[in-house]
Structures are given as structure tokens and as C-alpha cells.
Amino acid sequence: LKAIWVLRLSPRAGLRQQTTASLQMASESLQKAAEFKALGNEAFTAKRFQEGAELFSKAIEHNPKDHVFWSNRSACYASLGKYEEALKDAEECVKLKPDWAKGYSRKGQAETHLGKFDDAEASYKKGLELAPQDKALSDGQAALQQAKKAASEPAFDMGNIMAAAQQDPSILELLQDKKLVSLVGQVQKMMAGARGDGPAPQDQAQMQVMMQVLQSDPRAMRLFMATQGMAMPERPDGPDGAGSPAGAARPEPAKPTPKAEPKKAPEPEDLRTDAQKKADAHKEEGNKLYKARNFDEALKCYDAAIEACDDSDMIYYSNKAAVMIEMKKFDECIKMCMDVVERKGEIMEKNREGASFEKIGKLFLRVGTCHERKKDFDKALEFYGKAKAENNDKHVRNAIRDCESAKAKHEKEAYINPEKAEEENEKAKGHFQKQEYVEAKKCYDEAVKRNPSEAKFWANRAAALMKLCAYPD
Image: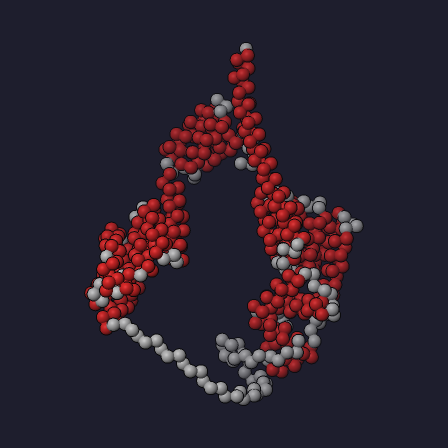
């Protein structure tokens, strides 16, 4: 009887072990999230808002269901002037915890700065219903009313605007762009706060962000200069310059003082030999034929270039290799490139620049491309590595990255085998019936890898995971 009870309890013991492991992993993830939150709070307190946003993002990765993390990142984004991002995080916070008043404070603040006054009014109203005495909500609602009032009143000195319009009538058209007017108005208020003439800016970082946006938009800068009464820059007429309309009154510009024309830099002396000039002419013709996909004639031109320069420059072989790759002559291309590399000493004796590191690297790059086209990814990565050792440029680095991705995709597709997937599925069923759920899950894992498009394997694995109490998985 004792033996029977041990056999009956053994599956439950395995179940408890799996449950404990799952709980331990969840606990570790929550602990890491709390650590990132603490670091994010420190960064926010020190006004390192970008760093704080990144740290709260990591906390969210470990625990996306904690509404506080979304609220804190929203605060960081708002402090950086990124109100669209701040609003998205605030909306997620409210979605996760609709009875938490602070989430509505974050949401209302972002909506106020985005000019969504009706939405902000509704957010603050909902928050105050939950927490009538909350100071942040009441202050936010008061700030909203001030923003609405400011939006309904002219924010600019119209005298300055009309004076600027005499020189550039298109200024008046800019006033029709509400977003542009709002941007310039915010910059004006921040500058007024810095001078002590108005409300102080909430944070120096916001001021910097707004000024950067202003400087990056020529239209905003023109409107800002007009509101400040600054001299307006001359703008060229015509389609590209979008100047004043025909017939608009414009004061005649003062005649500029004639300036001496800058001296043109002398063109560099062509130090190529006659043979090199002739070879380059053949190369240019070969390039044109290559672009026209006339590969046979392009090969003849590159061969002529090699002959013209007395086989003293690898660059023509590199161009020839590119044509051979398009013609799918991979083995022939590999042999040619490797032969040329082996003769680098001979080539350098004729022309020191003809076998430079860059040109050797290009030949290795061609060899790697041939191997990649042949699906020999390991060999391709080997030669890409040699190319990188000779000349570490972006083309080589991109080739390595793309080859690694292609290799992973190829291996994944090569692993697919519906017949073996069915075999693993049958094995899993046997384990499942014996209540050996861990072994059943392993077999279902293999079945999914072998045939990921078969829905029943996913469903069966889900059943095994439920038996193991691994509900998130």
C-alpha cells in the first residue's frame, strides 16, 4: 500500500516542483522591476528625465501590469516635453488601474499641453471624483483653465506682426496654423517666465526642448522673429523658396556692397599615368554596361581595364567579381578573387595602391557574398570576418549582420519536418496520459519547432502547461 501511495503522489510532487519554479521566476522578475523603479525614482528626483524614462521602461518590461511604472514614465516624458508619449503612458495607467486618481492627473496634464482641453477637463473631473482633496488634481484643473483662457486671447503683439507682414505678407498665413501659433506662444511664455514677466517655466529641460523644436522649423522661427519685432530675413522667390505672391508690395532691398568673388581652389593635378587613365575609361564603360545588366560586355570591359593597367590594380577584379555574382558564377568568382589576393605582393610591386587594405577587403567581401548565395553561411561569415579585418567599414558590418539573420532563418526553415512533428506529438500524448507533463511539454516543444503552422501542437502544449500551472506561458 505504501508503494502504491508513493506512485500516486509522484506526479503531484513533480507538479509542485514546476509550480515552485514558475513562482520563483515570477518573483525574480518582480524584484528586478522594483529595482529599476527605485533607480528611476532617483533619476527623476535628480532631474535626469531621459535616464528615468529608460529605467521605468525596463521596469515595465519585467512587470507591465504595474500601473505605477506607467505613471512614473509618463511623468518623465512630460518633463521632457514629450506629451504625446506621456499621454499614451497615462492612458495605459488608467486602463490598468481605473480607480487610481493619480493616473487621471497624469492624463489631464498631457492633454492640457496638447491642447485637448475637453479631454483634460473630463480627466480632472474623473480624478476629483475619486479623490476630491487631491492637490495635484485641483492644481492641474486650475492650470487647465488658465491654458484655455490664454488660448482664447491674442498672445502676440499685433503691431510687430503687421510690421513684419509689410516686408513678408506670408507671415499672416502662418497665423492660420494653430500648431505653429501654439508652439511659438509656449516659447514666448517660457521666455517671459525666465525674465520674470510671467509664470516661470516648469523646468529648464522643457525650455531647451522647445527652443530646439523652434530652431528646427524655419516657419516657426520666422513667426517667432515677427512677434518679437526682429528684422525679417530675405526669402527667395520662386517655387523652391515659396516667396511673396506676385504683386505683393515689398520695399526695395538696399543694394549690397559688392564683395570680391572668392578665389576658386585649383583643381587637383591628375597624377594618373596614361595606362591608368585608359584602364579607368574601360572601367567606366563597364560600370554603365553593368547597370544596364549587359554582363557579358561588362566583363570584356573590365578585362580590358586589367590588361591596360598591366594587372596592377585589384579594383578592376572587384568590379569583375560583382558581375560574376550577378551571373551566378560563384565558384569561378571565388577562385579568381583568391588567386588575386595571393598575388598581392606582385601587384604591390607594380602599384603600391593597387593592393591596399580596402581593395583586399572588397575581394574578401565578394567571396563571402558568393558563399552566402550558395547557402554556406559559416563560410560566408568566415570571409566577411577577413574583410572586416582588412577594412572595417559599414558595408562589411551590414553584410555580417544580414548573413547572421539569413543563417538563423535558414536553419529554422531547414528544421521544419511535419513527419517528425507528428512523431513528437504522439510521444507527447503517451507522456500526457501517464501524467508525465514535463516530458509531454518537451515533446510538444519539439513538435512546434518542427511544424509551427500546425495549430493542434500549440493547443496540446497549452494543455500540458495548464497541468503544470504555468498559466502565463
